[in-house]
Amino acid sequence: MQNFSISEKDFLSFKTLIYEESGICFNAVNRVILESKIESAMIKANIDNILDFYCFLSENRDSFFRFIDSITTNLTKFFRAKKHFEILQNKIIPKILLNRQASSCLKIWSAGCSTGEEAYSLAITCLETAGVNIENIQIFASDISLESLTGAKEGKYSAYKLAEVSPYYLSKYFDKEGGYYIVKDFLRKCIVFDYHNLKNTPPHRNIDIIFCRNVLIYFDIEFQKLTVNKFCDILTNDGYLFLGNSESLFGMDTRFNFNNIDGAIVYTKYLGD
Image (cartoon, rainbow, N blue to C red; front, side):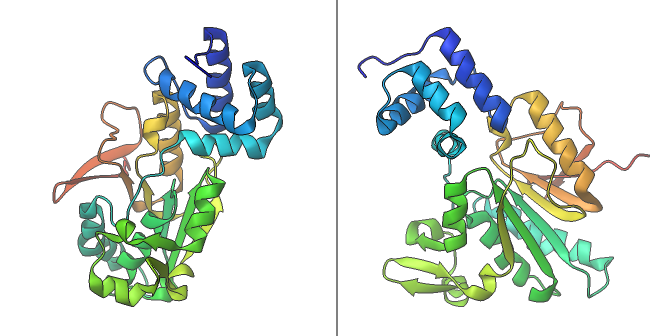
């Protein structure tokens, strides 16, 4: 497909389909990215007519969500933005546990978990925090990408993905298999991986900590606001929201307070005066 491009009408059709199904927003700035992904997907599907491809995606949900997989970036590593995990272990989890009964569960949601590195990093952080027992952790991890969830459940990672993991953690939480590291069963059992589209009602309530990092960047302002206010609805009153370092709620009409903890930005619920 030499010099591939699509008409304004076709761009708007694909843009609307993607937005209505996933909340992901394309505009004039990132249009070239969408066109490139459409071209690659058409070649792979052996379809050379843009209208035929649009109908193909509209009528085949599995194919549509594989296409969504291709247009979202699933680049992540263990303990990415390490400061978040440090303050979680040293400040936030101990503060939450201070006002809880010893038998109560710590509930964490990794929203947009990609291939699982963040969720497993959260599980390790919990288990390495004083006063936390494996029986008292509930970690939910969700994504819109079925392919990513399959990889997350498998829990098999290259050494590159584990560059920020200490030798002690590698030995304690992973088994070595050739050039890969496999998550040990006891760590895997701390996490429930499942499909979830952030356009829909959150699947859990009374969550203590939500990690939704480098996800909101795909959404327009209105959808970002709707999403974070859903998060507010399901967080406990002493809960915390973590966003990516390039994301911010500054200037957005939400029910969250801005907090700087040891140089890391986190959000807590606004409970009124």
